[in-house]
Length: 498
Image (cartoon, rainbow, N blue to C red; front, side):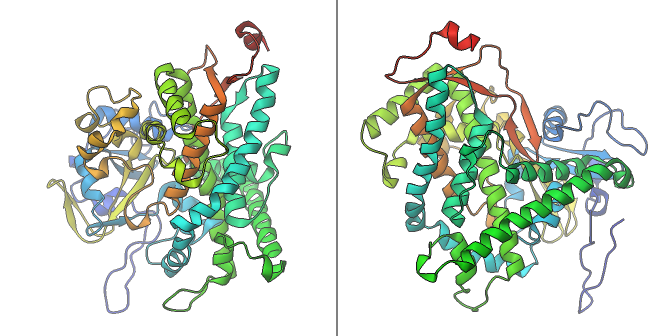
């Protein structure tokens, strides 16, 4: 049970540890929950522990814009209705809440940008030091490195297309985005495309994310027994991540100063806060590097994979996106940084994919002071709710009668202007939203366009989208058939039989 403490001056501090909804929502009974709640166990009938986000989406669609779920003594409030989500996006009333799976990542990422608590000073320090690393000038500097990494991807895909083999989309997108963030941010090459299996860093990262997900659905009292083996593996995974990052940082420190990269790692090591003169500690640098390596590639690889799935399944959208690339870029050499922003329809494809499957599918918000949500639900200071972005993005009040349909024109300028800003939140919200948003969008738009210009994409005939969850979302088992544009390829019959 959470314990309250007294702050200096007599104010009551927020309880430490998990804060159940019953502590913060005085009128919790007004919020619907699934039927057939089981005493002690809670809402466990019919749940699928490996897909808690999709479970919550299914339940929420039936219960309405605010609902609650309880499992093994943990009561959690979920919000997905656009009106309530709009209130929770108000920075004057609400702030980021670090809870559920995010808190489970703190043993790995500590007070890194994504996992820091609001009161921890290193968040603001790191944010102020690193934000210039995502300026327009910095992004233009990253562009050639993004092209180099994409070139390794297309070399691999050229070989697969020539052999008539389907490509492993999520696997290759993960290799691409890991190499991109590692090279642009930290001057490190993982050699992902030279391997037949995922780099051990990716294996360890997937292990830690999956472990954090499991911690969400296992009763705390049973975790020492049910997760004993998983806990040992997770400790080994974290040790490997730490070791890898320490080696990257040590190599940079040992490099000649004249070889400065001007990247994120240089900023972490060399730049002081412009006002206070403070610097990031060695421990915090490790945490920030892990945060960027994990968050900087895991979500973008998912976004690219979903976008490629929808493009391959919709010939009309694919043709329109490819025509735009051909018109804007033509047959010229690799595109300049400024040309990527001109691909407005390709960007709509990406946004629509993120609407349907935001790879960071939820975020949590907590009340700064006592307040009332929607004029109905009182919340005490510190009370929190999970905003289900994946369901918010399907609210019929905002997205129409067929929100499940894939339609990039939802992001045409007039359509965007007609909607409130808070109804599309694939990168979180407020001051704690993703610092690398523009980096991810530039990278993903560039990669989609390069692939559209180079290949015809065909889905496997029997594939049906299955979404895997490991805190982030990713298509499972997605493979595509490729033909080089303008290059004769194998016949359909040969390709299917390969």
